[in-house]
Length: 257
Image 1 (cartoon, rainbow, N blue to C red):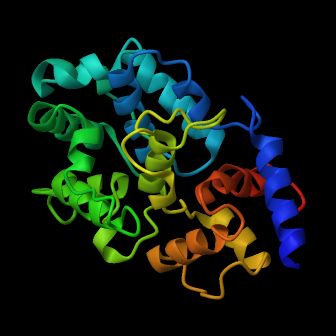
Image 2 (image 1 turned 90 degrees about the vertical axis):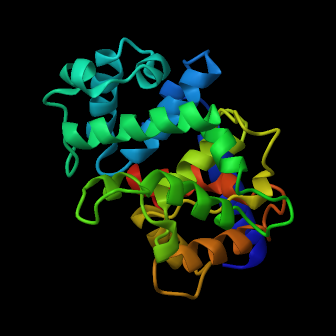
């Protein structure tokens, strides 16, 4: 496609999906949360499990939040394995079981205890001088994964940003937190520039961006995600990651590419 055709294609699909419940996705549940602390923690947990079929994922997340009476933040800050593990008993999603959830809540409780919020931890490594958020992502995941045994399936919930993974789910969480429109809640929008975000690349986004010839690189890794983000800046220099939701859901919804 020529530049003008690509821009039309990207913008039309972005606008098509830029409305509530335009496609099945956990992000819509976040808009129902009024308390910012609850929204932040819930969004992070949702992003950890953002893999596999979206309908099964949403079913699991609904079950989890129902077990916690909808207030994930209160459950997290008061989490004690001995008294609270019963709330997570028999909960599992694909590769991850209740033991991984216990470890996740323990880690998040420590973050809030030490920093006050996930945003405060992330900003600890963030600089407006950086080209993108990669350095702050390193600091963020280093803290969350510190002390975790190498064989733990907890690592699947939080990918290692230093191993050149696309870190799709972490970048998805950051998209939710930083961008603010009809799709993304934008809780951190005043603290981090959306131009610094990196595209959350999964198999759907990889396939369609390869078909559109947006990136020459064939390896689906962090370098690919960064190159794709830079390419999308040609179509919107201020908000390149806005195209993510549409590009992902075109594949999920089986629309003609």
